[in-house]
Image (tube, rainbow, N blue to C red; front, top):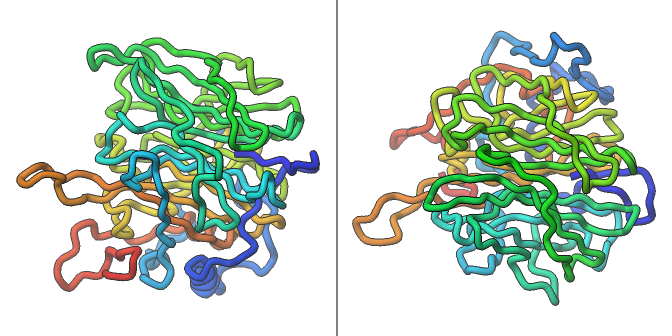
Length: 410
């Protein structure tokens, strides 16, 4: 989400000053791979279209290149979270990063536990810390922040509101009866210290329709924007999904949704995180999308950029495809990001899933959900996703090392 400094200065999202070892290897490798083709000058808003007919960027190079994330040395760094129900399995991260400490912590992250893909414990939870790779439950806080009796919760998204010096947590409530979907509601909680939270307030609802992954950005004090994925009445198996945009002047009262111009050829968008990046004069988005004819449990993670939040430039290759690393063998799901002060690097907190042993003898294989972090040079990343890359081998044989285990064991 869009971050505003606690002193009311220009909004910014900051990546960690302390460079992670794995993240440094990622940036170094990307720079080496792309040095021959990338200008040394930083692009202020690279490859961002501003016309209605230019919302998609096709592959810019005809030849296939090796994906630089497919090496043990440059794989994202796995993260550990102590979730309230004890599983440590997480999904839907969303981060706010402060230039300096806010209530003793710089990094504040909302997410949901998701053990065995169960919605029973999928309740918004909060973690915070001094580093991008080390966050825990702040003293005095008890997770989860919210529960529901009408169905389940998901998709938390946070923004810092400098006007009132508060963290605002938006999330989705799914109402169902007898396993039948009834409505989706978007709700809000507020906190002035990250520890004590207001009662939850319902902002708007959509009956008979899935309103997935609401994400909020606040470019100026009176310009609030909320994107959501309209998945119709089918939800995870929807044959068509659309990214919609709502507007607000205060983050409380929202307009009716308007369809954006977003197209990722061959894919349906499912989850997203959108932020206004002042140093780039553009909106950036991470979009988890699934292939046409499949469902939402096999998503890849894509980059998209926009000058107005309506017309989006998309790129030919994913940032990270499911199966590229063993931790995300089944899906690369809703992820979040933060830019450094100069806009040259971005830190990405990934979430996703991989097959795990059955919980009972003879039971079905389940999915294990987890998170990881990496820092990337933005211009190198844009060049990389604009390039057609060789597909990932999803089921490697004994001699095939295409899938990399994030803990170092291929």
